[in-house]
Image (cartoon, rainbow, N blue to C red; front, top):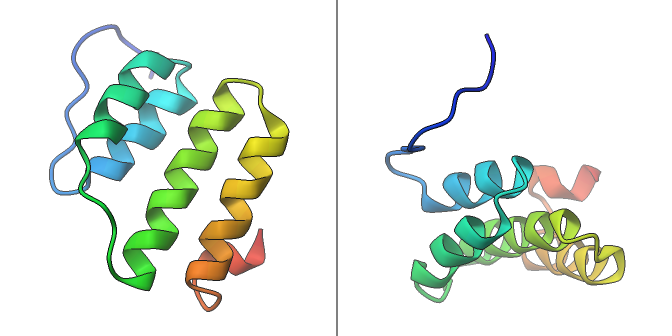
Length: 85
């Protein structure tokens, strides 16, 4: 199925929307959605937050900042699936 233009709607997981926009190269939209997200509190929330942030940095072709964010994702929750990246 080809990617279609239009509004992207993701229910229940705002960080997923950030990752989708970043993956599509819609960096401005990803950043807008990222700025709407409350400061993460739990290790899982912090891990997911930094993973999404890494996706934005990766889309912006900033590999050093992306790597730093990926490392923060793993450090926040070492037992998460991010520990395998």
